[in-house]
Length: 154
Image (tube, rainbow, N blue to C red):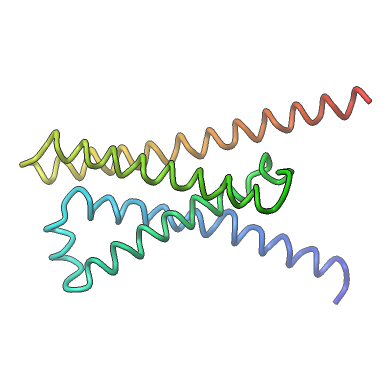
């Protein structure tokens, strides 16, 4: 296998791991939001395996956010691979538990309005995902600027 081919496969692997898996796992957060916001409807749709499916969605959401953070430019130069994993897991846990906390608050604000809860909850989850995406890109841009400045001063 030539060097160019192996480089191309490495690029494809990075895109799958750090771009496409996180992109597809956004549906996991929205699905888990359904479980939190409308548990009766979630159970009707999914059936008797609703707890297993909910846990799978929860895990998938953590995996997607964690992989996205792990693949970010600013964590690429973390002091060690352990630190990079640690920061990615921490960010994923904070993001996902913050989302669930918001869903629980929405559920308590609209206790008898399931459709409204779902609408507000999906909007909030989508907004969280968009803001998180923009925030990580902003941090990566700042990191690239700082790195560029330090390279030009030497």
